[in-house]
Length: 321
Image 1 (cartoon, one colour):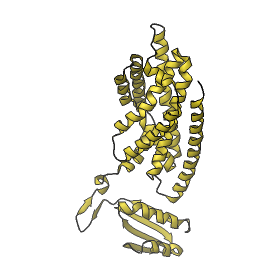
Image 2 (cartoon, rainbow, N blue to C red):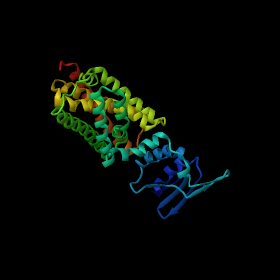
Image 3 (tube, helix red, strand yellow):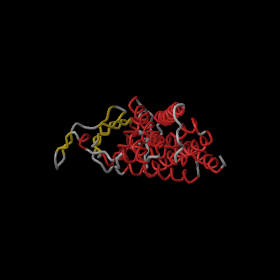
Image 4 (cartoon, rainbow, N blue to C red):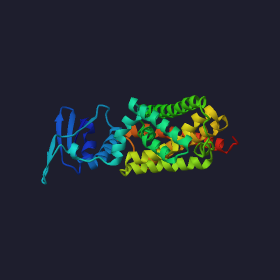
């Protein structure tokens, strides 16, 4: 339950009264100002706040709305103490809450990305699928992808920029480590171009389609409470090995470098596009009316950029490399 307090001038009081006509509320008068206090359930809060913010567009600019959680609420059934702590958030709410944390990277996630790239490198050179899958379990690549999607749908510019930085940094770490290790080892031993490496030097339009579907599926899976670890493996499978092959190719197989780079970008662009579409399908939006309008503008711009990027990657993937 939430307490909603609305402060407005006397000329706007009838509008608030109309909004509260079916609810029990307290109305206090202070000169030319009115204070309305009403108790709203968590399930009705979003709809109620949306109606209030729409009405505020036509009210005096001094109108304010305050929402807070009471310490406890006593009903006819039983006292609900610390309801906010007891109430279990939905998976979608948990996604939104965790977007802030996953948009940025720290030393621990950088270390995991570095270790995952080394493990993937080993699996690629040994042509061992099991080792490559083990690397996927370590790679923390899911967070920035869905943080980007949620930040886009909610209009959070700060997290949007941080998510892009995190994605680029992760990919950069994987490529650089793969290049440095491969170039160093090639001075000592002859490194084989295994089938697991060569298959990731060829780009094709189908990979874009698969990445879009995967990004969408991952967002839906997360919204249904599927473990981030399981969903993260799917994302890492699309990003980690191709990015490592880019570094390998730059060191010992320059002919396959462009193809592996295009494949990596196809997967990145497709995953981001699919996850954004998934966020739209899940109706992940801000609560405020003005924030919704701002988020819609950002969303349209990002969608246009993604469309252009996807078309460019599709064109590059059909060119002879």
